[in-house]
Each structure stands twice: as structure tokens, then as C-alpha cells.
Image (cartoon, rainbow, N blue to C red; front, top):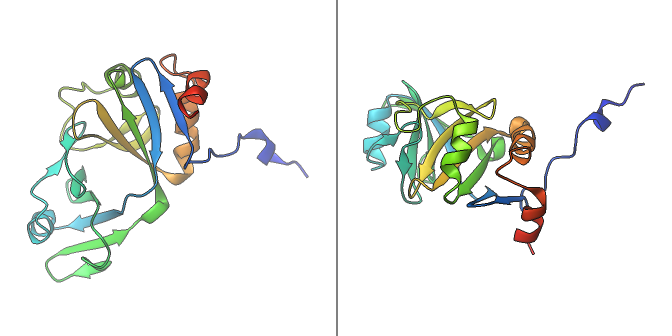
Length: 183
């Protein structure tokens, strides 16, 4: 029987994964609580005092925030399950924990803008209301965190290794530099 598993590289050890290049470092973040919310987003935001939600390439701040994915869907980061149960809520929204269903990659440094120029097809200064966009050929949630030189990318777990390999192939990054960055 043909063994196709040898065709693909093994998934990175996300706890240790690191890429670096001139002015940019990319790490995987493994400790974020991620929840999907669908329905009446205004009521959800008001009930959990999240203020507003951020759209594509806009800046999210703090440990708890909401990222717009579609007209009636958003990704909420940092909201614990004991604060809001999964399921349908009478206020008109549904909440689903996605846990490790998505990997989160954080890119930091002056080189973020150069990487964006390669990864997305939208104008970084006018990205639009949704953070869902193709990034390196994979649909992800893409936004800045705590400033324009820190980019977070939420990618489906099954596609994360593919995106990581795409990142490794970029001229802005080098595997040699990433090995030195972890020493």
C-alpha cells in the first residue's frame, strides 16, 4: 500500500517553533482561549464589556478582545468558559469554544509590513471590516495586537503546518536565523 505520510513534513513542535529574519520574529502562541460567537454580536459585546470588535489588520488590545470574521460572526479571545457557557443564549447569540482548533501565530518587528505585502492581497491601510482574509494562500483571521508591529494570525489547525512552510520559504525569513534565535 502506498504510504503518503512520507510526502509531508511533520508538523512543527509549536511550543518551540520560531522563525526569524531581519526585523521580524514569528512564534506560535499556545495559551489563548478562543471562542466563536454567532448571532446578535452587539448584545454579546455589551454583555461581556468587550467594547467593539476589530476588523482586518486593525489593532486589538489587552488580554480580552473580539475580532470580526463576518457580519454575524466573531472570534473572541480571552473569554473563559466559566464566564460564558457554550451553546445558545437567550440574548440571541451562540458561543462555541474552539480551543486548539486554530493555531495562533504572532509576528513581531519592523518587518511585519514587508511580510504583509507578500501574504495578503488587501491594502493594509484599508483592509475592511472583516479580519478573515487569505494570508499566504490560506484563509485566516488576521489583525494586529497591541500595535502595528505585532500581527496575529489565527489559522485552522489542519492548515497551520502548510502556512508555516510558506513562511519558511519567504526571503524575509531564514531557518538558520530561527535556529540562532532559539539558542
